[in-house]
Length: 244
Image (cartoon, rainbow, N blue to C red; front, side):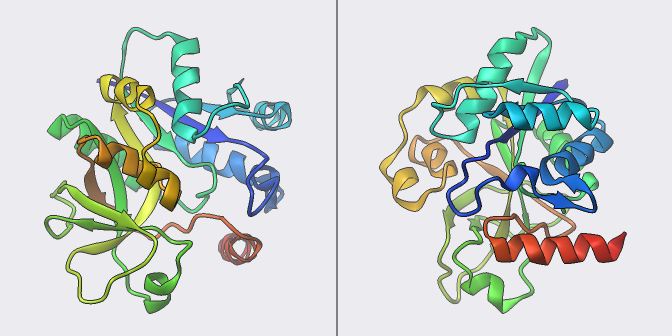
């Protein structure tokens, strides 16, 4: 079963404009994510870029990037444009890896791909355990509630996604910005209108749940922090520079 990995990216993020090209250890954030995807070695990797500057940067750093329309409402619409442009008949799974998660673990990317192949589900994502109370309280961090507890052998259903955390809820985890679609589910997803919940909560995955598309959740071994604000960027920069 062949997988295509696509990383949607644009410069016009509202909370942190220009973030894909922000440097960490001398390398742009989008190129850090690209290299993680390449090192996971589960399939060809492309960046779906809204801006020529991102395309140029990715190519300078040894990656493949395709310029897309700037009219897309979501990253998934952007990756589907690349899927259509590539027109590969042998692709069965498409992984949508967010370009603002440079700390994502290579083994977690591989595990999600493996679970999708093993279970044959429509749409999968990752979540990690929450050990820090601040994550519960931070509304920039998306949480997912599952029907069963997560461990490395299970792939339970997502019941809900939210930014707020309700207390005393079982099986609530930190959602990571990665999705793996089988091709038919991706086609169906992008053909659907944005749901009212998706627009209200700014969570694309709610379009799937609102249209009865199941999302299964695999356990991530490590916590990955997305970069949404300048504070996130400074924190991740410190972590990555310390590790190097």
